[in-house]
Amino acid sequence: MNEQAAAHVAAESGNVARLRALSMQERSRLIESACEAAAAIYRSRLAAGLPGAQRAPWPASTWDFFRKQAARVRS
Image 1 (cartoon, rainbow, N blue to C red):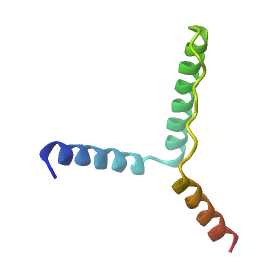
Image 2: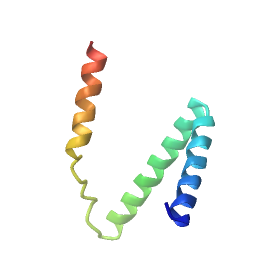
Image 3: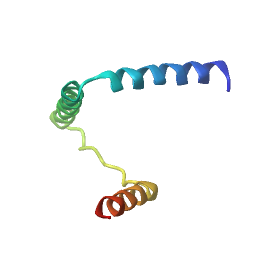
């Protein structure tokens, strides 16, 4: 692995560790804040006359994951 990639992995693992240290209430506030920011950006796009966001379909691997999780929960 090159030095730049190693630095990126190290930074990401630090971010993950910080998120894991948060309480559920802190995590929920973080998610809520991100959703509010995304909604504000979307409203700004519409107000500027830009088209709405086009969501990409989920890849097949995501649907497979959902199917496996649902089957596991049902059993």
